[in-house]
Length: 264
Length: 253
Image 1 (cartoon, rainbow over the protein chains, first blue to last red):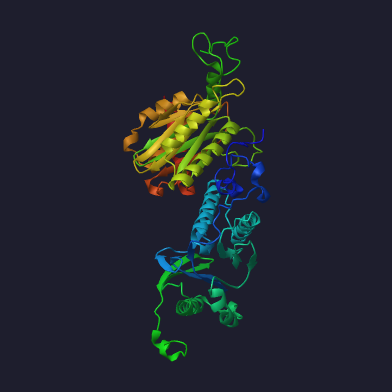
Image 2: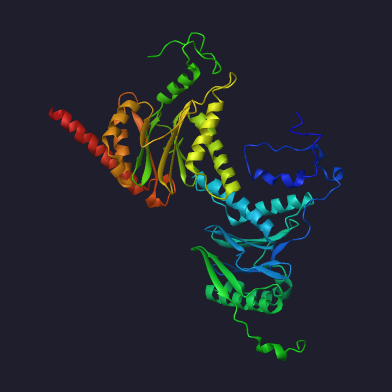
């Protein structure tokens, strides 16, 4: 009657055992365990700091679409451990998802989304995940986890074409979400957003090639200044014609270094 | 052939004195009353053809489809009570989803058929539920080649080369046996399946019907889907043409 409450079994794993929104099985009803509230638990078993992290993601909209770029590094603290881990994920032919922050949480989110997309596909009614729908869903998920004091320690960028118009939005680990023409996560937010915003005030006049060139500039700047950056990166361009990925590598010019007063 | 249950057919938890479970046999009768399905496993794929009987001109075409996708690579064709089969479809989809979540790969159709069979069998054991009144056909094209499984209301599965289930199953079965399935290509199998449906369709009892065709095979990379429009039109034309040929032959005699 109490839906599986067993007083002889420890309850301190209830948060990590349960999955949110019945991602794993739709047939099971959502059972609420009586000892689930924060006040009744005294042991914290969740991770509070991210373990394997991705650095910044840069994204902005241009005249006909959205462009995103993220390097393919998974850092284990300051160790550049996983050097071929792309962080931009295609959801369908008009939506992409980019992640920064804890990468295992990012994988959880990606898997949940892929499952959702597969479920919709088999219904054969033409219903498809649009960027706005994905943005709303991610917001609810992140906020729900924040409310339980067990956040997913990632920043998610949702980008794509919504009703043939470019869409770009970001959700952070607190469930705070916003839509903008320029979004940067991680340290790129501090290093690059200011000067790009000035350039991009007229962003709707940029065409695809100009946008790509600007993005290459941004990534190069981040590579110079961000200690957790990596030279190899992926650029993703979403337009009404579909999703395109490009693999690139930063060609840095370190001859500047002696000229800068603070370096030896 | 039908013997009266006379008291031993009230629930699935009862055997009759001669060892039959009547409720399961009655479930099979529900299957036999439904529109025919012809499934052909040929050299490089599996084709489904369904005679979806339409009882009223007021229904929108394409409503109440009887072919569905379980996962991207597995197709399910339904014979029998549609509402019962919809629950099985949901169960199958959940199984496939859970398998993918646990093992990272799509569920092999053999395992799905087994699990679905176990589920259907569970409903034949108790007095407070009734067996599912539907026969489920599962088709996929996997690494080892095309696979076609059928699950009966009793919970038994078989692996088929070709099968017909429903109203005209006996006649359709004889037609299937005439084909050389191991040499047939998928594009031809689709046409042959459509032809059989047109042949066994009873014009007198069920005036209107809609043909549903789907395929899965090497040519679409193992992704189960309804046949493209031009293939569907070709298959229908072929089926109608062979019907006319047959009736011309009859006229000559």
